[in-house]
Image (cartoon, rainbow, N blue to C red; front, side, top):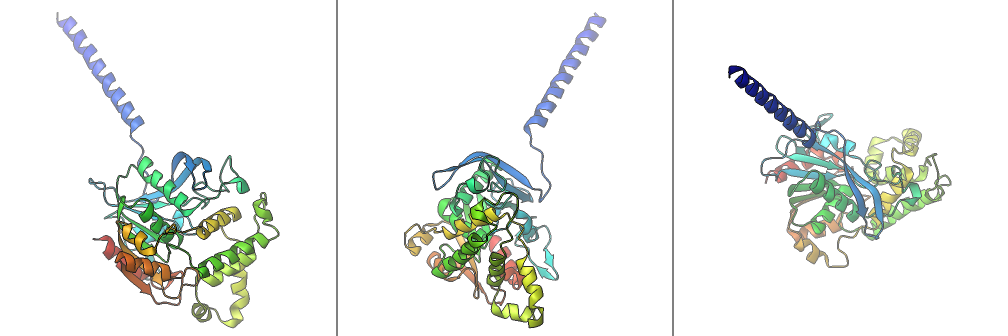
Length: 364
């Protein structure tokens, strides 16, 4: 009897142990690994349908996260990339401690309070782009818009990160333009919007500036209409134009003596990190931007649900601040006009003021 009891008990223990092992194995299978703060990750979306009706096959969006999503799931702050930028370029703008560039605080998102999600825009060479597509390579890649970027980003944060609501969307330059797109396309999804040096609609000046850059790229003999193969065109003229437009005459004269111009020119002409077609596809997306869709500014701005902090540069030579300020007036937004000679790259000169205002605004 005792022997039989011991046998039964032993069998039960073995079965219990097997169940525990099976549960543990299933848990390891189901629960995803938690990535370190700032690690490059990817959301595989399958097929992305675009404004044009075309599709991106094997579509994916790169992203990085910092901090922890709270129990209510409402402390996420999204930040898409700027023109020719990647999420690695945004790392100094988020963290648990105020980030420093020299002695300047550049942090915009405090990751001890917020779950920061940095998003690589389509065409940046990390997310789906002409340079990295396996089936729509180079010039065969379909045209994209900034609305396409935002739709793919929305899918990434809802389908992969499973966010149901976000606290805020913040963006600089083209990231700011995507912030306007987010507010129009997904007005119920987040509470606060902070476009910095962005616009809801390019002006005639902006369009002229971007078209000159596009023409400079197309005129480069090595670009070959986007079919340049493995040899990247240098795009010297386009690079020179970008160097000039990012700041102001005052900034340039104050920071570069006349005798140092040859060194400045050499630096300006250096090839950019981005693949040439990636640059062209994102540039065309900026040229096509128009979140108003033919409607009056007041009507579109007032229809958005977010509260706004609109930040512009008074001396921006790349994105004229007028439309963003008109939007702010229509939406009853807080505004900050940076009055520094840095122009478009206002974070180079005015990071402390911008950071203080953004962090105070996010604390609402």
